[in-house]
Amino acid sequence: MKLQELKSKITKDLSQTSPSPKLDTEVLLSYCLGFSKTDLLLKRDYEVPADKEAWLNDAVSRRAAGLPIAYITGHKEFYGYDFLVTPDVLIPKPDTEILVERAVDVILSMMYARGENLLTVCDMCTGSGCIALAVAKTLLEDERVPPEHLPKFTLADISEPALDIARRNAAALFSNLGSLVMSRFNFVRTNLFDAISEAIKYDVILSNPPYIPHTMVDELLRDGRSEPRLALDGDITLTGDRAREADGQAKDDGLEIIRNLIPQAQAHLAPRGTVLMETGEYNAEATAAIAEGMGFNTEIHKDLEGQLRVVEAWIATSLRSSQ
Ligand SMILES: C[S@@+](CC[C@H](N)C(=O)[O-])C[C@H]1O[C@@H](n2cnc3c(N)ncnc32)[C@H](O)[C@@H]1O
Image 1 (tube, rainbow, N blue to C red):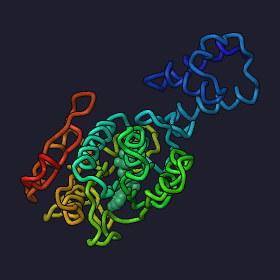
Image 2: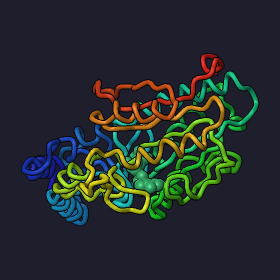
Image 3: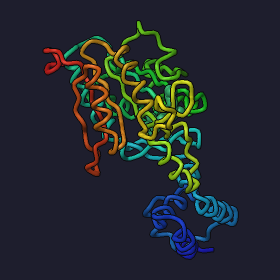
Image 4: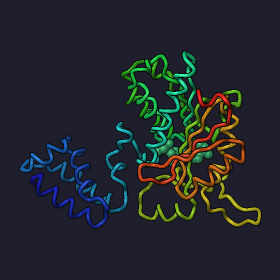
């Protein structure tokens, strides 16, 4: 079939099930044929080989069953960088880009104020590694940050398969920069901070933890998206059970992991350190209140859609204004 004809057919098929059939069609065709967006416009009469057409038909069926395009292609762009993704990891979301942006600002001002000492950064609940790796990539693109000043990053997750993807992403994004840069990434399998000694302190702790209420996760997963529940459900205790009130009623505010994360992050935070946590727009204020209850000062940052998204927390000291 000719490209233009196939493109129309795929868009029509996807329009039954996808909210963005045109975009999905372009992404699938570009990935499968190795064509740029311009190629897709110009090569209308290109005869698509039969094996590629078969792959595309299969991809359309998988998309129709709810599988996101990123799991079909195995790639997702986040903060301008390409990340490998599989159903073992959450697909990086544009909502999270504000966390990266703020983290870069915080780290640059700390580096500027503190001189030669290498900063330490922990990305707790790292998944694909997209937050830590996008921060590191962006820092290295700044001419004020030579590779030898790159902070040390710890990428932590409870899921070994997720850490495997994070390792592969680090290698894909940084191995061409040599062993010094690669040595700055350390991967730890841990249930929040339980495998990280309290003697280890971080200047910056970043986290996009699971924060969605349990019943909302049930709803979300109904569309067949295949994202791991472990990455989404915030109502889970440290022992992996559904969180409950004292009277036995199931909790459904998405905050159980955050309730555990905040004190643990505080115990691992270096003096003058900063915590940046992603939350839902519906539980950002409650997250800030939990942090304030532990003695943190907080500020809530909005995402690009204007929704409350990132809680920044720090312990007040007279030195913070100069970092
Ligand atoms: C919302 S996803 C975030 C992934 C990635 N940082 C991102 O922003 O796309 C949450 C991640 O937390 C991990 N996770 C869930 N419970 C955890 C726990 N108790 N300790 C450490 N990681 C956990 C999941 O495996 C998942 O990778």
